[in-house]
Image (cartoon, rainbow, N blue to C red):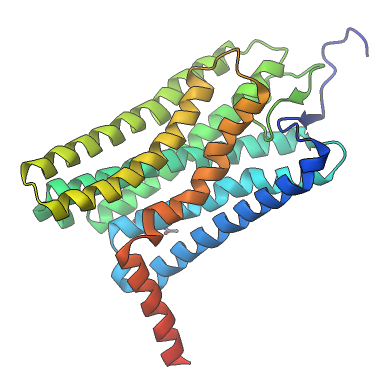
Length: 312
Ligand SMILES: *[C@@H]1O[C@H](CO)[C@@H](O)[C@H](O)[C@H]1NC(C)=O
């Protein structure tokens, strides 16, 4: 096998989390708790939006789509991470790795698009309240969501096929806790120019443009509120938009930092911590920030629980 660079690798080692053995149990419990919180929080939102007809508005339907993507997005990485923490050798098969890569991109991109759609929805609601129902019609929302699913699945398929073309020779250590596209490219012994070009182009379309659109929507919301100042209005906008913006900056900030401006002096631990932010922390926080603090959601929860009691 020596010197034969066609020796194909059948599995990769995921060594992204160098956790000392004395803290192993602590981190295992922490990740498990975060995962369960993500699943329960997001399932609760999907169920509430489904069950309560007052929540059948674009904002909550988008939110329920976001919860669905959050749920899937964290299920792509965390169960494998938990399984690997229990095994001696944290490995993943080649096919498993490409599958993880595909679904990671589908749900990660969907998350990015949905955050824009939700910011746009708030922008229309606040800046054009009289035209809201005609702009955000059911037909428009359904087609938009369908279009986004088509975009994310085909983009992920393209990147996965481009990755499947590459050969991997000797290096098989991924310094992440999941199969990450940029970490995989570094291991390949083929020419990765086309892959890097596509990451750069699609990354711009999927990450930078949505991020700018979100910032623009919130800036316009901000100015439209300032035009008609009322303490209540300003308070409301700061409390909702402030928390939205913090999630948005956590999500985009870490992704942009990791993929679009990678720095060579980042340590593995620092990069893994950044990756944790958008793969584990934002999907967990989204349900709380976008909805469970929200009055309509609390009312819906009470309605759903009470109507169940009555029907029993
Ligand atoms: C996603 O959004 C669409 C369009 O608004 C809606 O019809 C659909 O029920 C939503 N899906 C989920 C899982 O909430």
